[in-house]
Length: 478
Image (tube, rainbow, N blue to C red; front, side, top):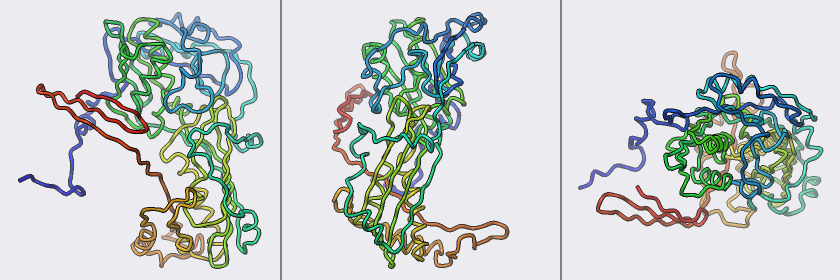
C-alpha cells in the first residue's frame, strides 16, 4: 500500500535545494572555459543628447584588452524592428545597443570593452573619453504629465481601460460625500541577487551555447537568432537557475546582445556580466501619477469612481500596465470612468515588476477608499463590506466564487479590529505610533487550454509534448 501524504503541510525536499545552499548551483555568470574573454560595458553619463566624440585609444592600449566596440565599429545586426522584437516586446522601437550616437536614457551602454580578464575590461572602460552634445533631460513624470498621451497601440487588449458606465460626473456632483485626491509614486527598481549576465560559449563546430540570466530561454534564443541571422539549431540557450527576476528577466537585456556579438565577431567564448549600478538602468516599475475622484452616499455606498493614471515610459517604447481597471471591479459601483495615459521620459523602458499595474493601482484605490470612509464617518472595514461585489461589472461576468467577505470577518476577529481606535495617530506602544489598516487586493487568474503527452522509451528517455493555447507546442526530451 502506498504511503500517502497529505498535499498540504508535508515537508518536501527541493531537488535543487542542496545545490543552492552549498553554492554549487551554477548561474549564468559561473560558466567558464580556458581562453574565455570578458566584456564590460561603459554607460552614458547624460540622459538625453548625442555622442559628439568618443576616444577609446587609452582603453585599447591597456594590457589584456582585445577590442573596444562603439557605435562606430559595431558589427552588423538586423535592420528591421520586427527582428529585434522579443516575444513580450512593447509597442514602439526596441532598443538596439551601439546602433548610433543618440543617447535615449541615462545609463545607456555606449561602449563594450572585451579583454582577457574581467578586471582588465572594467578598468579599461573607465579610460574611454566621451564628449556629448546634451539635450534637456526629461526624468520627472510630474513635469512630463503636460505632454501625456493615450497610447495608440495597446500592449495587450486587456490593458485598455474598460468602457465608462453610468453617469460618473453627475453622480459625483450629486453625492453628499466626495474626495478628489492625487497620489504620486516614484519609480521602483529591480535589484535581484543574481546580476544580469550572459556567457556565450563558442563550440568547436562554430555553434553557440549561451548561458543567460532570463525567465525565458526560448525568448533569448529567438532574439539571438533573429538579431544575428543565426539558424535556430546553431544556438542553444540555457538558464538552469535564476537568482531573482520577478519580471525583470522577461525581456533580453543588452548583455546578451554584447556577449553573442563579441563571440561571433572574435570567434571566441565571451562572458558579459553587468555591475550592480547597472541594475538602476534596467527594468523598473514606472513612476505614476494617479487621480482618484470617489463619491459615496450618506450610508457609505459608492456612487461614483473616477480613476485616471499617468505612467512614465521611455522615448522609444510604450510600456503599459493594467493600473486603473481594478477600480472598476473591486467594489460595487454603477458609475465608473477609467482612463490611462503615458508620459515620455529620458529613462530606460519600464517593465513588469511583481503584480505589474495592480501593485500601483491598488495603492491609490485603497488609500482613496480609506479617505472616503473617513469622510463619511464610517469604519474602513465596514465601508468595504458595504460595497462588496459578487459580480464583475467590468466584463459583465458572474464571479464563480469569492470568500473575501469571510476574510474580512475572520481577519477582523483574529486581529482584534474592534479594539482599534479610529482616530489617526491615537494608538501608541510606548513612544511608537501604532497603525492598524485594511486593504483589498485582486490579481488575475488566467485559464488556457493545455495538454501534454509523455512517451517513455526502453533506454529511459522521456519525450514530453506539451501544448497550450497561448504558447503553442513544444517537444522536450529528458
